[in-house]
Length: 252
Image (cartoon, rainbow, N blue to C red; front, side, top):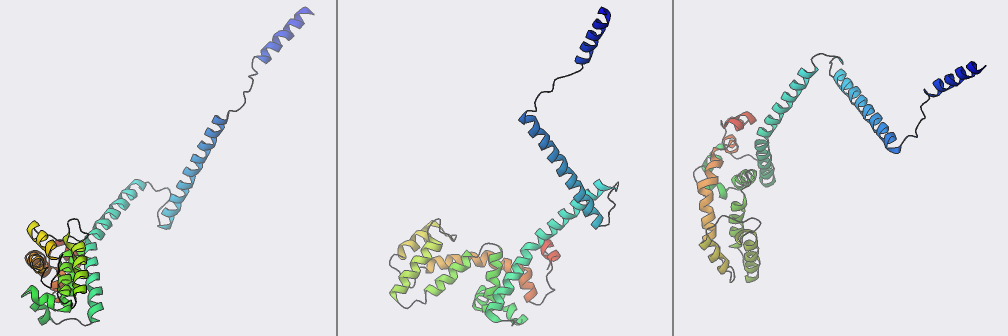
């Protein structure tokens, strides 16, 4: 009887030693499990989306050349990006010229003889409304239109018929183009800038003459020759239609 009791006692201990008391689940471990589950679900959704996209483009979901396809796609994207970047200046310039010219002249295109005269002097270019629109759009595409805008503002200023108009326009021109740090400050030497500022305090029809001549000279030496070499001018002259490829490589 005693041995049976001992056996039962040992058996009881043997069973109890395999019973591990369960500890309550902490909030942190529960949150970690939920985060892990969400992460696995997101991965599954991403994998499903990739398979769907590849099936749309005729690729086997289990293709062994997946990495090669990824490399090819990336190379194609980079190539398209470089091509688009090379075309942007040309397309932007041509679009602006077309818009400006249509605004001033409708759909009337100047003859090659008229366009050829633009190449003889900048005066011929600026005195022709179509030529002025093309030159302005060209400068705008290079972010250097402030010189031309200043020159045009001076031309308009010189036609003022009253002292009130002179004072109002002179103040506006100085604020926009002459004062240091002006929004569209033009490139003038310090002496010309100071002189123009003083003269504009008692404005006359000629107070901007010197500054206007300086800016005209800058355009004639720099912007005007570039315009004559541009695809825009050459196409208006009757040359081959410009293409993004020729613009990128500098060919006419």
